[in-house]
Image 1: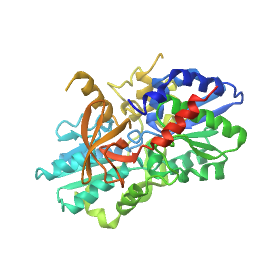
Image 2 (image 1 turned 135 degrees about the vertical axis):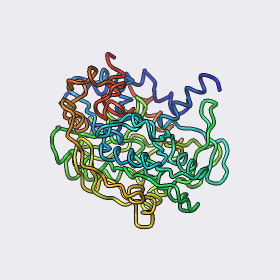
Image 3 (image 1 turned 60 degrees about the vertical axis):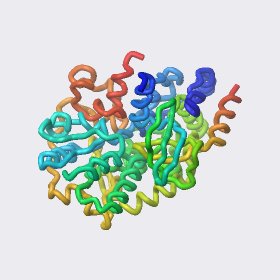
Length: 356
Length: 82
């Protein structure tokens, strides 16, 4: 595949590894994107790094950080007779008791695009609710879909807005100060939308470096090399993924996003409330808010399952192998926490690529 | 659809952001293709998209044009490593 295979070249991977191995200080780099977690695991990139360079995973899995109470609300909407349209990896995430998959009485359809959900609504009469989960890569696609719904005057389409924002979560982690992060591998497709400027507060306020990375192994390795160079030359925001990310991002997508949504305080499963880290519908689009339309009151979250340390894993404090339930009680077939279920969750990824 | 094509379809479905080529445009919709597999995507998040452009796809939408010059520059840099 063009623009993919060239970035998987093994010889160049080893050359990059050689250069990184010339860096001898202790360093801890965190990625905040499930797809980066996947690249690191699939290509066993940790083996190419020296012992002194550690990689941590942060809360880069939007499915993993969706609160149980929202899943419960979506099930409630299903019980009211709405067709629920959702991305595939939301299906098996447990709410406070059931997952969407386990709630057998409700009509749930897996979709690849929010436009698929819109099409289901426009071709029949039942109410369709789209479970809008995702970071800044996904929220503009939902915004565009809602603008289309408005244009079509669709009365039977609404969304449960569960979108979250990455830069405020990065700030929250830095404020928590639980890990000694020296640099961030910034998410490539979130940044394709938002650009590199939203990360400027990170070197400025915290002295921590940022490199916006692509998703192929050479992209991630080159980004790690750039972060080690920043540790020598000074923290900065740099773009490695220049073929997709511009400093200003995608202004048209941002404009559409801002017409439909605005920031709000948001609850992150495993982390707690982070100010201004979520999205809610603006006044002009509030008629598409499914919780309001069907009068659903979100319930208080139940206590956590004993032994589940998803929260610690999402904050980069522990890794999946530290969890007593990992691979024993908690597996992809019988997940306890969200991190095991999602294709972008650390535990699911570590389980899939274990003993590599 | 061959087995290979259905495997690639699954890869696209998993939102891995593989660059795909625009093969047809009709208003806000484009036909995209990669490895012989074709599907529909919205181009309403972009301006000035042309047939032959490579784009990054996410959840059924093109989110950015792949900058081929920048891709070449990055590859040149990587190939020059000693």
